Image 1: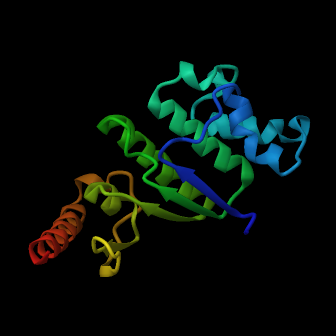
Image 2: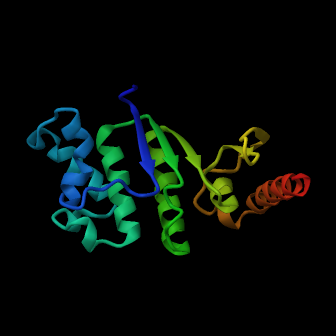
Length: 180
C-alpha cells in the first residue's frame, strides 16, 4: 500500500455515528495521528470543501453533495498525491455534480496531484480528464485514448473544444455499442 494514495467511492464511506469532523479525520485516526495533532488538517480540509459550519453534524443530517464533500475532505487531510475515484459524483444532481467537478478541478490546480476518475458521464470525463481512456464493455479493454489539452479551465464547459471532445467520446461509445 502507498500512503500517498487516497480512494473516494461513490457511496461516500462515511460512518453514521461519527461527526463530519470525525469522518474527515478518519484516515488520520487510522494512521495513528491524534485528534489534537490532526485537528488543523481537518479544519483546513473542511474549510476547503465549504463544510466548516457542519463540523459537528452527522452524515444523516447532510445532503448527498455535502456527504461527498466530507469524503473529499477526508482525502485532503491525508495530503495524498494520487486520488483514485470510482464514480464519486454519480449519485448527485446535475448542479451539485458540476459544483463538485469545479472543486476537484480547483484542488487539482492548487495541489498538482494526480486524479484517476472512473465515470460513465461523457461530459464529466471531458471536463476533468486530461487523458481520457474509453473502455469497452466486459471484458474491459482500452477502446480509445483521447487527449484533452483544453481541460483545466473553469469555463471549459462553454468552449468549442469541450464539445468536440464530448462528440468524439460519444462517437467512440456509439461505434462500440453498434459492434456488440
